[in-house]
Image (cartoon, rainbow, N blue to C red; front, side, top):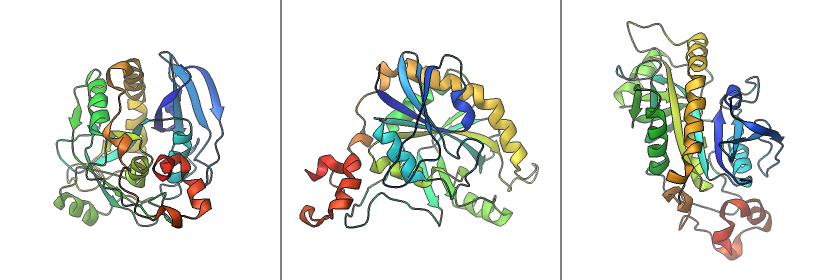
Length: 288
């Protein structure tokens, strides 16, 4: 009852859902700074879950300014083992229409100015994220989403751009030529940091627009994004409630919970004491 195993990262409105009780705000400090906001913890279907507004309440942080390392570390410190990211995305495929939901299975990091890893400062790791999203959690998420909508696509490659601007038409067409399916600004490095923290991670991506490539559709605007997200907030809340209600069926040890096994290469005797302390929560069990 008191364990917080599920973390939700997304917009500020997600935790304003019916059925959520015993709500408290938890401030967390980390070796990587403060997270985007306080973490909202509440009870849903007899389980404690955590919500973290990715951009801060009121949407104060650009995609580049989001403190991704602090966010993932803070959720890990609360005991979170499964993260559902609720994210807006643009479609790079005709069949992924606005209003649809995509649960991607691949990720391309095309960002430029972000801290991408917990490691460094005397401790080197080489994560192997061939499959950057948790296949097991993807399946559980797909079952939950499928109970509320037929407009679901399982699989696809999610490209993360730096932002905060949207793409040019030339860029959008290039990403389509590369075979990308959807586009957003926040999934990298979030997914890779979750993997380093050995947290299973999946994305519920809400298609809000056709980016700027579609000749018969208007180019993406903030108004488009907000309109679709507001319309889908109830859907996201229902999916989260269903996921939590069925945790006994899917909340098992997953491959992601062992993702750092054999990833650390540094001679243990040479790791600086501060680095070892800072990363104890992340990989302490491999350093003993």
